[in-house]
Length: 478
Image (cartoon, rainbow, N blue to C red; front, side, top):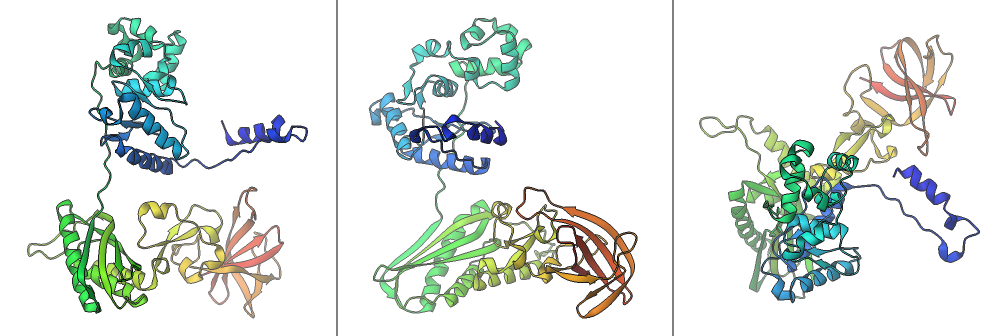
């Protein structure tokens, strides 16, 4: 239901009134829907099921809600079908999950039983010879049909799986399309349905443990270089490079240190990664003795393919590689959050229409980045965002500075204003441009913006704020 309707039901619920007993107090929690995070969490749950079967995956749906396992040849290790299902459901419930599980001969049957027949207290096991008896009484929605097909079946009074099976098979495709017959055959095993499995990613790790301690940085660099070459050789067949490298070292007493290297683009050059690690070691000194070194490529990606000429030289020159190398050095010396790039945000308020992302962030991380407060945005950085057109200035003042306006012209723009210890006479103006935010914001704004040209040839971006009844200069044009 819509959020407003749910909130209204909570507010009008008898349990929320002052006359209700204390033990009937209702606590409701609302949270934004995040399908990407939901699917990532479900993949984690599926990986936790690897103990019961090496073949596991998610259902094929736009918003999957089920984990599927192929338990063929695995049930005898847990005391049969029921023992495996009970152990799996118990393990997931111990993690605070509400689970309904089932074991059936086909994927479609297992899905149907889990949704419409299984109880929340214990799993349900359906043998192959009892499959028709279990599925026939179930509603037609148990066949994983589309809403359009279910609505058409409801109009004709066809409610259960048994009613659909009683119809002549030759008439089903012409009446309801090929989907209905396909789902029926998949549920009863007359058509093969393959499980799209997912596998647990194998970590790319190389490590060294010696009988003697490393006491110099040169010795550490030599060991790390050998480990880097081992990692990169494993990535070459995949044509992948390292985006993030984690280096862990341990002292003789057991104390561990970790150094993380982030790269703007994937790289397969061991020398470059070693230089980035050396920058990390400058920020945090290495211990005097090291007995264990571990390297892990925590983030990899496909290498970029560059067009080359007849003699093997890149056609795009070295400019791009030099810029990327510079960004890598700055990010690993100063920290990833100290070297950022601007990203436009669809916000009407100018000072909130920008966000900063680290150059080493992935696309998914960048999409979820937060907008920084307006007071942390420097005018020089914001100036890089707006094109040099009539619409937006090249520099924004943070915060906008109040000005004194003598009198406004017929179009609303001031004829002169006093700012920065000088009086500026306006000879031309453009506008107004109304920028207003919604009432649901904590501090909504309502402004009329004008671009004005002064007698000295300067261009300013001014606005009149309705609530404060004042004039402000917000930016300047070069």
